[in-house]
Length: 508
Image (cartoon, rainbow, N blue to C red):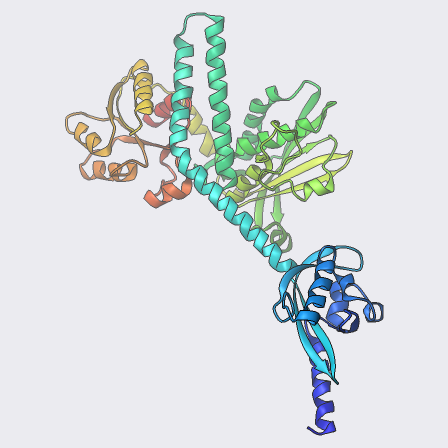
């Protein structure tokens, strides 16, 4: 090769190194840096004249810098390859002392009889971030699958416990000890119910039954639920806009969102303060919609603001993470805000937080506003709940014996004639010789779903009213069929009052 061709080849090689995305350093046998490319300057924060002449170990924190020296000496003396020509994942250290993951590969080169080494360093920060997100997503999926799998049986048990405690309390003789014991049973079951809902909600696997709700009415009703949970030293102010409008949401989940945020606000106002709940309508343009991860359209907004201590910036960055909590052990599960965000996102909405230390915190919940008049849609349903519906023939189809027996007892005490089946095939047989006014059926059962049972009843020419019930998740229910918007549905676990009220509503 003539001198001109050699110079041309060297120029090309230098251009490639200079243009490389990865950081490249050429070091001698002692580890001193002889040259570095622009990518190394960008990655490590050193100017080229600052790094040339220094030992390459300055680019690595302990213990990697000591390991690198050992590997280089071993290779030069024995030819043992621990990193030369192989490469490995290590940690890099920038000029400012911060560290980051990188992949380091070192290749031996010979120039003019000298042994030199080219170190190629690839920043793994983005890769590790994606791996972390994937791991987190897989963890959430695993937890969601586990929660969905146990929800049905656990919710059956909770319904039986809650119902039996309520039934016993309503029939028990005046006995303070018995009353306290039954109340403890009810409270324990209620806590179990709340925990199940949180697990399902943050994993977005909770059974949902959206209804048309006037937003202002929903906030007023939530206030009735949380008022007894906050102290008298906290003033509650409602500022409800007349144009707040209506949303399509699951009432119990919307209550859960509001109450969770209210309890957090209470905990931030240990010396008392003001809790402000406001509603409004707001159009979200394309730019803001992209930032919030929602559609550009008109939204109904709930604002929950406190005058408390505020949330530190480092906590704000992590507060929606599942299992992250700043509360003392035993005081919080770390599922509160992750549950809230999961519910809001499941309703195609968004949640934001604005907080300043010593100035308080404001959460805002954006839910898609619907065009229907919620007041006219909700009011008739409330009127129907007061109607009487006694003395009817009701068929219960439930494969769980505890649930089936409890529901039979409750409905018989309420004056109904009750038929009970532990499987759909038996239920079809019971409809041969009886005029059925109402069928209350579980959705997921051995052999046949509740949806299929109802379809077969229709084929036979029967047209009873239907109430579906389930403790399974939306994803599992969707595999069996689909609830129509007007189908009556009871989410397990439910209280006796919920059962009797829904029956009166459906039969009225």
